[in-house]
View 1 (tube, chains in turn blue, purple):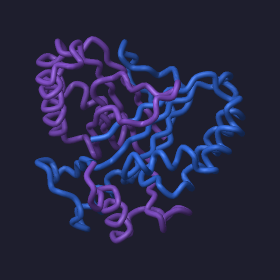
View 2 (view 1 turned 135 degrees about the vertical axis):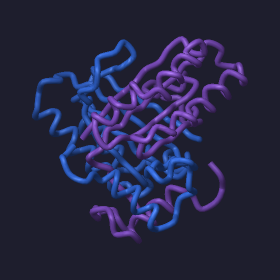
View 3 (view 1 turned 30 degrees about the vertical axis):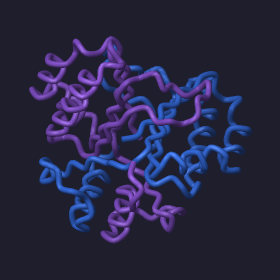
Amino acid sequence: MKNRRSFLKKTAAGLALAGLFPFSKNASAGEIKLTDALIHHVFFWLKEPDNEAHKKQLLDALNKLLEIKTIKLSHIGLPAGTENRDVVDHSYSVSYMVMFDSQADQDAYQVDPIHLKFVEDNQHLWNKVIVYDSTD
Amino acid sequence: MKNRRSFLKKTAAGLALAGLFPFSKNASAGEIKLTDALIHHVFFWLKEPDNEAHKKQLLDALNKLLEIKTIKLSHIGLPAGTENRDVVDHSYSVSYMVMFDSQADQDAYQVDPIHLKFVEDNQHLWNKVIVYDSTD
């Protein structure tokens, strides 16, 4: 994160300008609650977590995955430096969050040739993956 | 998710109209990659997962949590009906995802009186929580 006007602030401003989201109590502060969405959040644990080449390969490959057309919103990240509380898991290597408009779009994503090739080319890099799919 | 033009589609359209996001390869399809953000994704396992009153209390309380001013984007959900693959964890009760502009904003959120009261009033409902904080 850089020390400039952030993308999230611009996102909220953009949505407000475009008048395209239902104003919540907190709309003045820029808060946007996403609905009618399916979040697909994947956490990867690399076999060699300190291998920067492996991490770079996975990050590059995940960025290419975003070419799949049914993805509407995404965020690719690393563990944040937040406080080490008992409930916080900072042990993973890479976080990959994508949002779809529907479960059907997520299902199509799973069998998209780009996704299948991603798994084939990169699965040797990790030894654990957890996926959480949530809908509202 | 309802069978109408979804909020995610409108979000993408709104951002495109406002010209506020850097166009990616996939901009024509509406894909938006969020950057300069901290995702705070929390999964709750209720002590009584089939107790609908408990689930409603937690969902209502999480919706109130969104009043905290540093939250920029949010999604509150339940496990999706996606395929039961080995890597997919559908066992949690509620998913709560909020995004901040910075780690400082997340840190402020943790000690906000609204958040502290949320924990005090509702922690008897769950027996497990996992938090993933990711930044780019």
